[in-house]
Image 1 (cartoon, rainbow, N blue to C red):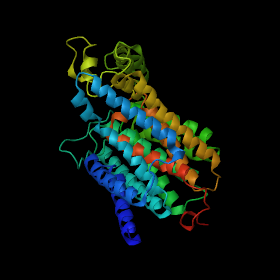
Image 2 (cartoon, rainbow, N blue to C red):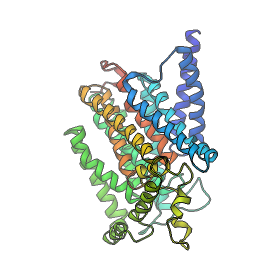
Image 3 (cartoon, helix red, strand yellow):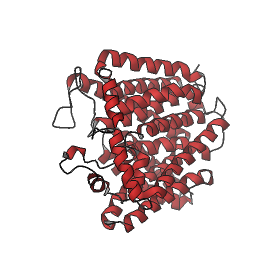
Length: 422
């Protein structure tokens, strides 16, 4: 195959993946179409170039991904709806976004453009979210957004639910903030300013969803960020927390009013809409199906069987509102352990890379962004089955790729395009 043909294939693959990343901010249909085309082209490129998409440096991450998917498949086969459960597993193909991203992000020029395009998309949609809060505009739907407790509307962007928006833009905002701060010594000033601006607007838009899970995760990750990324991050973390305080105090005071009562209700375990009530009944499903779970698509029926007969439909949940518990209910305790193994392998790999990278190395920007964005997502997944939400999950795959590519590359010196302007 000629070098020109290889270059053409690489360029086409890059733009398809860029479309996937940019459109993931607004449309799951467009983004997954682009990702599907990227996967087909990536398979061709890897075959022609004899490229290994599973490098040894990421061995344990991919081993646990493989075990997790295999156990989901076994769970589907041994349960009462093998065909339907197997078809529902199709969303696991989103893992493919990781090796494609790792391949593309190894190129200095490509990763600069990917991050820039993603930051611009987050910036624009965050602005749209602010307009939505104040005006109620909803360009992508026929109905108006849900009213906010104080004034205005709860931000949901183009997504079906405001919590999806909160989890997505919270993850994106933390990634861009950590990327910019950790890359102080290695990124150009325009790129850092773009990422910082997009992250702050994204944080405000996330707050205006009124989603307590994403907001609590934001505060938690920003507080611990300084201990993970060092003293440099404290200043930016303090600014972000100040933005949260000012936004809540001026635009969303309803988040604070009655918080004690809502917490008591959630923790009491009697209210049928509380997380503790949902977790308790989900745990019963795990105890009754410890090896293979109930299979994909069967959680709602199993959960409903634990409730009183006349319970409203809105209380018949399709997931456990906790990722680890949800996986355990669907695929059994082994499935949950493999799922946890993915996270442990990922974070240990990223942390090892962070400790090995010098302060001025470009890798720190990507590693810092991936570590803190993953921490935010994991915090959100404690009260939501965020991993089962495809819009947010596909973003997480890009975040993981953004950190993992560094662990397969040499610690090369700074490139001119990434050197800070002075």
